[in-house]
Image (cartoon, rainbow, N blue to C red; front, side, top):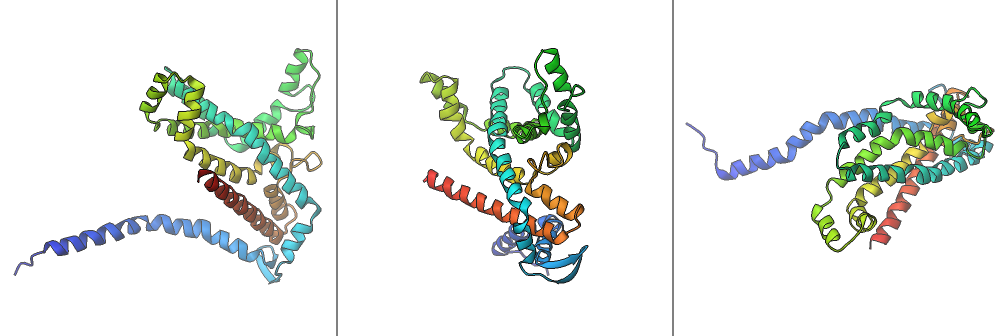
Length: 301
């Protein structure tokens, strides 16, 4: 006897498929995130409360590792330097990608070529970028920048050895590499701006500056805020550039929290202190991000 499927059963089956199939399809990705991201993160937080020999637990330390990190004379220096990196990154590295995105968006011809040229530095590894800029700004006459200064009759500079400009130079090198991908994200966001708003602004006689301020920026506000938060997170994780270009010098003027965490683990072999400093850095990021969201919500209201 053939079983008939009633409309009610079809509706129930359809609801079950719509509710559970997406979870089933996404299960491999969820497991990968849990195993490869969350499991090491949680384990690292737990191990930061223990004494370690290598990665073997030898005893419970409580907050001793955190006290040791906070009592280290380099902690305050690392913290101040990291915030200085953040300030310089907002000055040097936040506005240029937006400006480049606007420039590409306003071009009538050659957008694909300029998108490729803009994104090209992002394809180069961080280590290679560090080597390139170290060669360019090498002190003495062997450096490319100093050789150019000599040709122009100007005095040579110590560049990365000058404590006054070390961090801005490192941020400049980092911005040169990462600006392309960020600019293209802003450019993609600009494509979603309603063209009728531009037409209305043109009818009202608005120039390009007013169109950008009153039409474009409000429309891409979400992307700007997202990139702002990501920039804060990225700057607090900066490590390779100062490690490869200055080794944290001169006189620890460019050392960061993440670089010090790396030195704890792989130079001093104090894994527990490295984990503790990583947790402290994460907490600082949570506080900064939470404060930013609260202030943004108040401004929006």
